[in-house]
Image 1 (cartoon, rainbow over the protein chains, first blue to last red):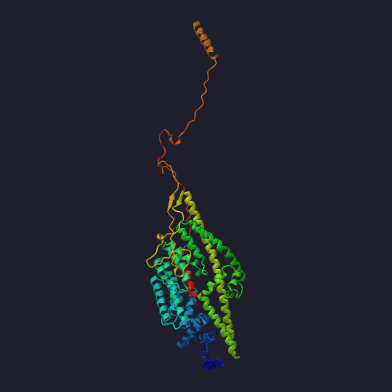
Image 2 (cartoon, rainbow over the protein chains, first blue to last red):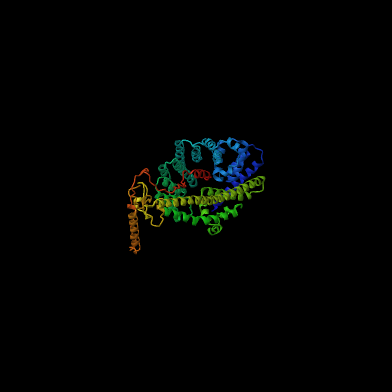
Length: 481
Length: 84
């Protein structure tokens, strides 16, 4: 116990000594004072304060040393890229380190200046910790520029391999998960690349490399369903979207999954089933989306309503509007929201620590800056949540239009059958195993109204295509056509 | 001449005697008659072209453009931007 107290005391004295040094430097006229204060603040684990002085150093000096680059990487990891991303373009272009290059590349990508993003990011060394992430941005940039397929595939493969290697060498769990996420993103991008080039088998193999334990897995079920649809395996497409009905995935709801269902039934000529999907969609989604839209409009100008909603009890969220509880769960699982939330909490903790400092001009300076950062983060997160909810409502509207289209098409096809005096070959029957298409390495489970975790994502319906028609009219034309 | 006049007079007298008798009328109603239109044949030569026939006029097929995904470009962008 005594030893523990001594250690705490030593740390406390050390932190005070570092703060004292930083205060002295702040009042001095030394040219390198911003850089040195940044180092002192990093040592005392005040990463947001360190980011303030690091940016001031970049603004005044431009180029920086290898040691400073290492410090920047640590700041970016602890305080987030956001803390460094408000520097002007011309300053960022002058810096050569991997951290600021990544920030610049992401900015260019956001602006859809893909060539500029590639030009910036390709300078990042394969030995940098940001190398896999840089490749993850270069790949889609090449794709959007319409570059050669081989080049894009090579980029994704290198990304996946380097991320896998860095994940193995990662010093702690969070870093390992970060690289694992990048590896999965690169594989998913590869699958999407194959899909857009109509290489659906390649796409399927790439998607199947994502394990069920992955955070990304529930999201790609929909994309896998489209891939099966494109391969003409409508039963598997139906099985994949049926997975969203599992209690484990109840917070994942995608209106587009209903389109996959309806068009799959449509392609199997099971028109009544398709119409039932359309009707269910209108009954479930439409009234709820209208109620959600009203709730969003009422609070769209608030500063932190949506952010606070994320931390409310489920019952409170449900009072705001339908889907809000489920959407909140979805958003809270998202990487971006979690990273921003961690950054926000760290910034708030650091502000509390700074407020305990003795009075000094530096304290006043950094308090003002950190409060600005916290306010900006909160606004950004609030907007992010609101945007996700608005996007969801918009998606419901778009899907409604597509559902209506499907309904019209089915009615038109049914009418034509009547005009031609034809009917479909069979009435709807239960599925059969003989109608299930599967490769040797694909599992098969019989669905008997229960979802089992190890079976998720392996379901396939066994419905027979009903597209063959029979003539129902008997004619007596006496041999005449 | 006298002979001719006498003959005419005699004919007129005999005709007048015949018309004065009441005529015997036998009414007969038309019986049910069955027409087999399919069996009717029209005699004559066909002067119109023989290959003319009436085709079924099917309803116009409305081929609607249903929503099918062709790419995941939007998701690709979002994944990159939402990593940080």
